[in-house]
Amino acid sequence: MNFRKLLYPFSILYDGVTALRNHAYDIGWKESRSYDLPIICVGNLSVGGTGKSPMIEYLLQFLKEKYNVAVLSRGYKRKTSGYVEVRTHSTADEVGDEPLQFKKKFPEVTVAVCADRRQGIEELKKKAGVILLDDAFQHRRVKPSFTIVLTPFDDLYLNDHLLPAGNLRESRSGIKRADMVIVTKCPPDVPYASLQEIQYRMELSTEQSLFFSRIGYGNFIKGKTEELPVEYLMDKPFSLVTGIANPKPLVQHLKKRQYSFEHLKFPDHHDFTPSEINTLKKKEIILTTEKDYMRLQPKLDKFALYYLPITTEILNSQSFALNEQVLDAIEGFGKS
Image 1 (tube, rainbow, N blue to C red):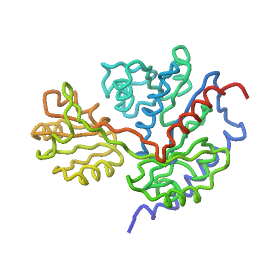
Image 2: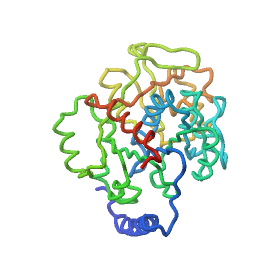
Image 3: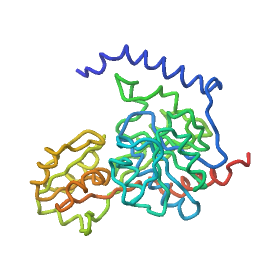
Image 4: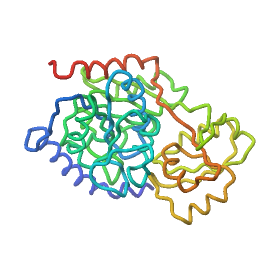
């Protein structure tokens, strides 16, 4: 029995509170502030594990060539407060693991963390012409110029319930605020008929676009000073350490390729204790995610610690169409 279903009465109460809040913003009782530069929001309806980080990186990859782009994140679980600009030498404790990941991968891009998105935007306006808001779909105090909502293939918002009985942060009707919806983490060989069924069930408006994506895994594992072919692990027992919301796709990817490993699973954004680090130090080889690597590397500096990079891949050769819609939103900003 799923005991979370017993919490359904509390979900009804939660629905009333979030619906009233959204209504207050919709009719102007609460101010949703617009800005004089393009702001692209990447978020979701549910908690955790939808693929926001690789989507932010996907956008950065093509936007940074044309625009002075910046990323603003909350910096979840960081031990600092206020507005902090991320540096390549920052720590995950100072700025959060995902913002640090963005900065290390794109050192030329301005990355900042601030719980108050309005304050963060005011600071970044001085340095950027386009701002990517990470995980800010429910941050209604800011009105983005373009909004992308992600939902994972095996956990669609269509099939979910509101917190605490389910994982939805707000009602499914919130999808109406999205300009673009991306179904992430699709299986490698997903039938086209399954994608059509999802499109039919979503009933998006003609102004909304729908894309499908999957996770692309790198051919090399990366450590502090070396990069090795992923086949290096084929005949070596190793420990897979994950502190992410949904490690299932990565586990399936490795098992499908017949790697031999033990999986040590921790909660999302887990703060590893000294005892856990001592246990990990006894492992011969550790493979982890890029996000977890940001937290583990300083504590396992001289150990065989590697991460497997991932990317977002748009299905059905639609990456050009997706990119063009985002570029059109930026180029058309303020003209209508």
